[in-house]
Length: 302
Image (cartoon, rainbow, N blue to C red; front, side):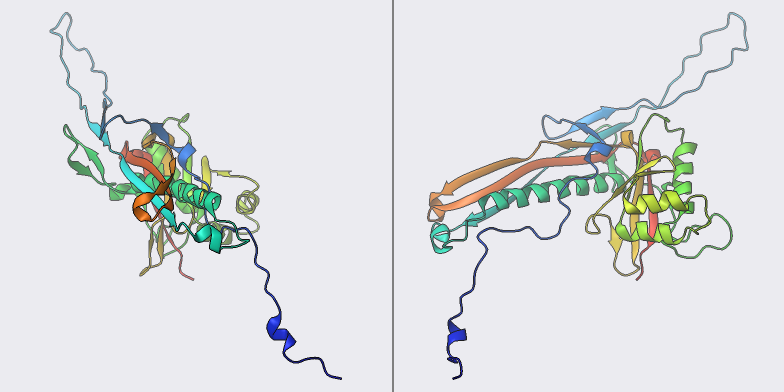
């Protein structure tokens, strides 16, 4: 006798009672790589003292020569951020065995906050820095502080991904600017740039094993830089040219302010007593010196 044909239409579906986060960059990878300061008020001014050189004395008992020096200034301004979810007062009841994702919402906001920290650092490195007596002079990162997408140490240049030659050039630019050896250096790259770096290294190369270990995550340092692999969604990318902007910098070259993450969980009478979960923060960043930051352009064409 055949099985009853209508039985399958009554088969039940089991639903997981909890929630899972999809793939995303969850932790800040750059915060420890910059200087963090607090700002009380809408902005903070940093007074700077330019370098100077000694003068040769050519006259005995001559008049004292009074010198002047450049005293620039940098400005750091925080800006507010928030993220809010709203749950209807009946959601928890109507979800049945599925729990209301309150803790998952808070965690999701934390992940978003961590990514916002890294975005703030990237913008501080590459965007204009505000300078001058009242902080309205926009100072860009000059072309001299970049490694071209077609950079090659020898021969005619063609567009390429991240190469050892480009890393060496970034190191040279920092070295030539007399950046302190004790000032930690970092480089933010993407997974594609890391893959391209390995591809440009021959098996017989002196650097191959180090680069392979870097790619495998076994080491994180190369040519004096500590590497940070950053999400494709954070490091700038030109969708027309497929050119990615990687960043090399000295720790003292970028300063941020971070109020920290605050979470508010409230019942909203004005929204039919819905539950609101809102996370707030204030972030800001600035480049302290142009010579301490290098933009490295890498072709990430498929």
